[in-house]
Amino acid sequence: MVISLSAARLWQPPVCRTAVMLVWAGLAGSVCAEPLSFDDALTLAVRETPALRAESAQIDAARQAAIPAGELPDPKLALGIDNLPIEGPDRFSLGSEPMTMQRIGVMQEFPNDAKRGARVDAARGRVALSETQTRITRLAVLRETAVAWIARDAVERQLARIDALDSENRLFDAAVRARIAGGKGSALDAVASRQEAAMIDARRDELTARRQQAIAALKRWVGPRAAAPLKGAAPDWPIARDTLEHALHGHPELAIFEPKGRVLDAEVAEAKADKKPDWALELAYAKRGSQFGDMAMVQVSFDLPLFAAHRQDPKIAAKLAERMGLDAEREAVLREHAAMLEADFAEYQRLVSAVKRQREVLLPLADEKADLALAGWRGGKGELVDLVMARRERIDAELMAIALEGARRQMAARLHYAYSDPTATGEKQ
Image 1 (cartoon, helix red, strand yellow):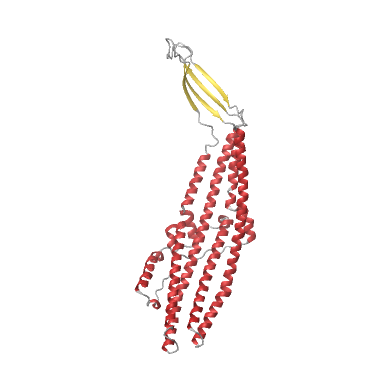
Image 2 (cartoon, one colour):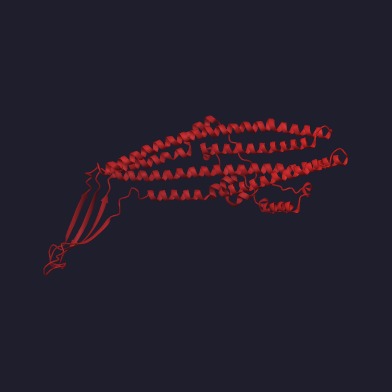
């Protein structure tokens, strides 16, 4: 972006000129920086956003947690003393009583196959859930980065148009002064061009502030490169109602219900598997006194789920209720996004019409009005105040056309990244 310090503005007080120089100094670093294209911004956002790094860590955690999901529990080591006398002359003796044994054993529990399979399915579902959540976050990052880049681009275009008005205003000021010198105008007319210059400066200040706000919004996603000059333009995605409605069921926030359902289904299966008995095997070696022989022990134990009505059945009912609740939640989210799609598409259509009307009707009318006012003023049949007002209306129309186009592209970005997968359309991020 080029900052113009035109001669037409040298009449301003030193404070105003100092402020302009400070703005120039603040932008000098960004002017020298490598330009930031739309694709560059998306690539940086995907690489640098902390939220995506956090999601990646969650995927790694879920994958690591899935490794032991179907494994057997760790074996248990048992150490003990059996039949130790505590009375009589041989109390606390380890070798005088034939029944006294020092025992060491190992026990291994074996959960039933259905339970272990359900745990594996639940772990895999959690991995898929983390991956889907990462996709949702990634698309949100792409969407917000695109919206922020487009917002800054629109402000930059408005600022460029404001800067181009400086030279035009100098010519206008010279024409007013020449008319006054020729005795065809009043001294009050000399104020008009300066008022217009002040109005242009006020617009520039407003747009400069908005530019800084746009940079701050973009910096959240791309970091320090947000202040670099922009280059290129954002894609103009085709937005069709039929395509959006067809993709509604694939909305990322709806896609997450599939892995959530897998996890709950596995938890239901695990709760049902609690009705099947687990079993355990224990091996032990028992050492007795030197005058007695050592002994060994083998033991198999089984769970007895005899009170399912008060233990396993309530757990199964709770998980089934969660599953039903998840289905209802998905339906609610589907309806919410269907309504949002209707509203967003209606707003997009409004912006398309507004952009067309602004560029094809209102802006040409504003140009025509300004030209007629200028011709009337030059011919001595019009008032300078009418010309000034016509010029202001033209400036407003030009800035509004840029703003509306930026809003249309922002809405297109929101729709594009909400209802399509960029990787499926060949976008490189």
